[in-house]
Length: 157
Image 1 (cartoon, rainbow, N blue to C red):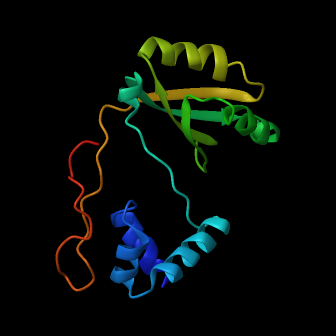
Image 2 (image 1 turned 120 degrees about the vertical axis):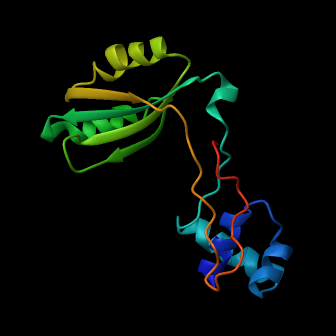
């Protein structure tokens, strides 16, 4: 049942608990308790996603970082304090860390990479890639082969 609630919330996170309950066959109170438990366990999180360009962040980049192996945790801790970074991933492969960042301009990205991230003890190598556009995954058809479960446009987000 929790999976059905999460699927419904993924489709429309702003729907009321009453409409969510109707969709999954539970009462409003049962839905509310299940959501509270999912949030308390860390399984479900809610957040508002704002288009970074609305906030003046015109440059969107992937930052890849190779670290001294014994300092990876310290590099991640330092990166977690940098508000420009939206997500930080510990990875396998050529680079240890990949981060997604938003910057006012390419000059601001350059300054961040050279002055802030590049000065963190343990950073051995960096690579940045500008993101030109972002696309939302195409809506998926439901298991019965019916209509898509998500009416989000497939174009740029």
